[in-house]
Length: 294
Image (cartoon, rainbow, N blue to C red; front, side, top):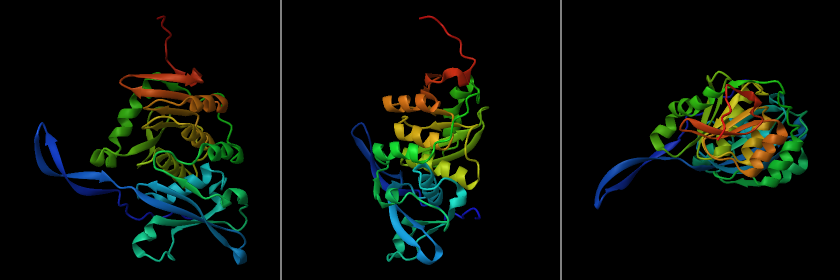
């Protein structure tokens, strides 16, 4: 399957606002991050008996939609490899032309055997929360989560400090709108490998994982993931399915995220900002840290 060609994204829009300073207001132009629904459909079965179903509706920032769909299918356990994905296209049979770029269909190979009960669920995911916890927990088991490497990678403590600045420098849409999350993959030396932006944290990560899937980089055993917001259970789950051993977040982790990372063998860092961060579990991957009393 060839790498898909993505249509130019419509990721932001201009609006007129009244900008207030003190008690004075002036009319000005502002840029907003776009948020539109994306319906993900899936086609599966033998060539002569294909079935098509809606699998998910998620609120997302338009752009890299095929990567988002592929990443969602992979992290939710619908597919286990790129080889099970025959192709992704914008649905030509959508009645309203202006809505066609908001509906994608992923065609699985005739030999792919998706979990039919999972396909029968209709997910609705918001840009902030993602799919429900029950679904995510089941996905961890269904996807046969790769075993994370037990002997590395080792990351210098100073590298973790550098990641937020390097991520922000690469966030083109954030610079214009100030309203987008980012998920970025780095090498253990801190080199940026992949970055995607979206109004939803989970969508940004699905886009990154989908891009890695298309480039046949999975599992990502030698990568660091940085997310721009907090670290939720769902983000830990998606990272684990992709084989990512180190997850760092600019914000706080939840208790369930820490518990899951500990069980997966994943190094989890939080509050990575202002020259500090916390390591919550599997700190052995972070080297060059000295213990001080106090």
